[in-house]
Image 1 (cartoon, helix red, strand yellow):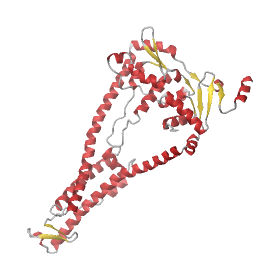
Image 2 (cartoon, helix red, strand yellow):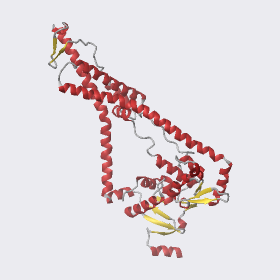
Image 3 (cartoon, one colour):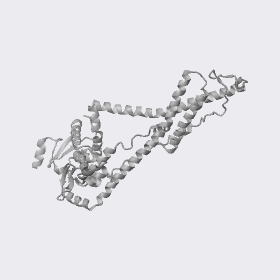
Image 4 (cartoon, one colour):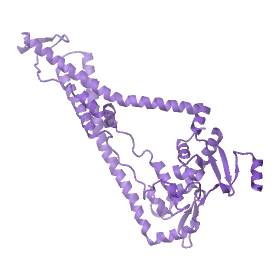
Length: 412
C-alpha cells in the first residue's frame, strides 16, 4: 500500500478513531480516496472497523500503526530511508554554496595579497620593477609580467569568523543564509490546495453538511464568467470531491447538500481548526535569512566579483591557458552570484503582486454574503442541515470481536 501521509497524520490528530467524513474535512482529500486509504490502513496494521445502526463505518487504528506499517512494508521503509538521505543530501547542497563562496573569496584575495607582497618585496630588494620598462619576477609564483605596484590590496581577514559567531544563534546559519539569498526558500504556498480543500470541508462540516455557492466562492480561484458563473459551475469540483448533491429551491436557487459529512465522531466544541473567511495565499519572501545575514551575503557576493576583476587585471598579461580558464570560471561564478539574486528579487516582487490580486478577489466574494438574496438561500438550506454525533450506543458490530458474542450482547 502506498500510504497517504496526509491521511495518516489526520488519523493521529483525530485520536486513531475516525470516519471518512472526519478525515475528509480535516485534510480535504477526496472521499473515495479517504475510504480506500483507511480500509487498506486498517487491514495492513491490525486495525478494526465498527459499524453503526445507520451503516456508518468507523475505522479504529492502533496508536503504533506507523511502526507496524514500516515493519510490514519494505517499500515504505526504503522510502523513509530515501527521504532521510535526500534530506541530508539537500542540506549538503545548500551549505555547499556558502562553502564555495568562502573558498572563492579566500583564493582570490590570498592570490591578490601574494602578488602584492611579491611586488613590494621585489621593489625593496632593488629589483627592476620600478624602472617602468623592464620585467619583474614574482618570486612566489615565478611568473613574468609588467611591473605594477599595488600597495592597498589587503583583505579583511576578520570577515568570516565574526559573521559565523553572529549567525549561530539565528534560525539559519551563515552557509544556509547564502543559499537562501541566492535561491530563496521554496514556494510559501506549496500547501495551498491542501489548505483550500481543508477549509471547504471544515466549513461544510460546521454548517451541518450544507452550503451555498457564495460561501464556497471565497476559497476558489476560477469562478468563471457569464452563464458559467450564473449557474455556479465552479461548484462541480466541490461536489465531486465531497459527494455533494445540488438542491433547487422553489425560487430556482441552488444549495448543496453533503450527506457524507453529516456524521461525525468529532466534538465541535473541542475542534481548534480555524477557518478564515477566505483563502489567503502567503506572501512571497525574498529570503528567510535575517537582514544582517542578507546584507553580509550580498556584500560577499559583490566583494567576490570585485576581487575576481582585480585578479583578472593583475594576471591579464600572463599567457597561460590554465590561468585564463580559471579566471573565466571564477568570473562566471562571481557574475552568477550577483545576477541570480538580483533577478529573483524582481521575480518575487512580481509574484507578490499576483498574490495580492488573487487575495483581494477572494475577499471581494466575502462581501456578497450580506445581500438579501443570499439570506433566502441560507434559509432554504437549513432544512437539509443536520449532524449526527456517533456514540458507543450506535455501534452494532465491530471486527475486534467475534460475531456470536456481539449477538448475545444485543439480546441482553
